[in-house]
Amino acid sequence: MSIKSRGNLLRGVLFGLVLILQTATTEGRIFQDEEHNHPGEDLFKKVWKPNQTDKSNSEDGLGPMFNGISCVACHNQGGIGGSGDNIANVQILTVLPRQDSRRNFRLDQIALEMLFKQAVKLHPDFEFQNSVILHRSSVQNEAYGRWLKDIFEFKSVTKATGFESNRKLVEERGRLLFETPIHRVKKGSAKDRYTIQISRRNTPSLFGVGIIDMISDQDILALESAQKKTDGPVKGVASISADGEIGKFGWRGEQSSVAKFTAQACAIELGLSNVDHPQARLPFSKSRYSIQKSHDISKSQIKELVEFVNSLDPKPIRRSKTHSELQLLQKGQEQFHTIGCANCHVQTVGIAKNVFSDFLLHDMGPELADASHSIRKKTHSPAHSPVYGRSKAEFEIQNPQRWQTPPLWGAALSAPYMHDGRADSFHDAILVHGGEAVSSVDKYQRLTPFDRKLVLEFLQSLGDDSTGGNEELPPETHGWGTPPPRSRQGRLVRKQP
Image (cartoon, rainbow, N blue to C red):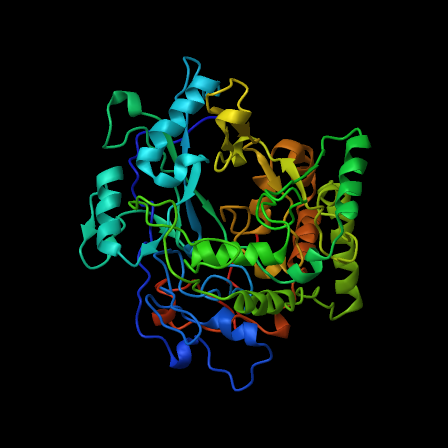
């Protein structure tokens, strides 16, 4: 796998490191509605603050490491629970082994053991995996800023806010337009040099996840089996999560249920420890996880959040106003099938109608490769080690080109597209497909301009924004600065070609 822009130092890793923690609205809510249909909705909108105290818990509240101050600050496009624009992307820090003379990454036992031995000096969470979340903010921002400067040689650090991104960076709708891998860190000798990559994850939409959660494993495995029997290039593989179950949530199907997805998001994105997941620790901390007497969010609160998220219905397909419009959308869907998009974006899976996904992992080619979380270290105790009396490490390596097919229901309201938000439109998203989708991209490009437009119009129908749109987020409650332009329905203003 090739690495771009080797000359760049890690400028702009955290383009929005600091979330402005100003006073939230009454009762810590972003929106003040007269009616609340579900207690979990209040928690989803709640603005969390550091060192909060609660009648039932003695928690430390927000942080110590966090990417947002509420769930809705990131999940808001097309309505509460929607996707997020690139400005809310999560930053991932990944380390890779040294390269050989042919510029291939060394994946032998010695190289991998050396990688983890060295990388743990960079960040303590590199102990068992080659990627960590590089959080946007910390409750100890001054110390976090010093750590960033010391480790990555950042040039701009202020006492009040920690890291301040380079203002000269080219940005578009909050997205940095270049990769920022580096090959050198400040600490250590020449032997400590290894490849560091910064990648991003776009916030997924939560609409319809309750229905997806009820899709049976058999339905997904049936699609996997059917694709294996075909002669075409599409050969999806079911994702097996850490708990051994089929994963349906996350860009690579890392989580098998909404409950586990929610618990992890609370702990990692907001720093809210819970019974199912510890909060992210300070990178300069000696302990593996932040130590606290009780959890920041209770088991019952997590349950309420899960129930609310599960209640978010998928956005319906836009209704055609005229018979001629209906015919054009039908023709667009026919072209969608003809060029092969429906091989992965299956319209109905089990009980999920109009979901347009197969929930399988597909090889999307080297241009979409991302080595984050691709190497995991497993250590046997001496008693169970193949070499008795010695601890033996085993490494699990995942294909960095594989991504799970995202559902397309409501996709018209969830731009930008792809795992890192690199595509602003459906047209752009189609063109960056590679690997198993190369033939479909070729067929799409061979369509007449009119037929391509039909495909795009069909995709634009997958999400009716007339049913309610994005509620305006006051800047003081999310810290993102100026949000991208939106229509009255909350839809991002993005033009298809």
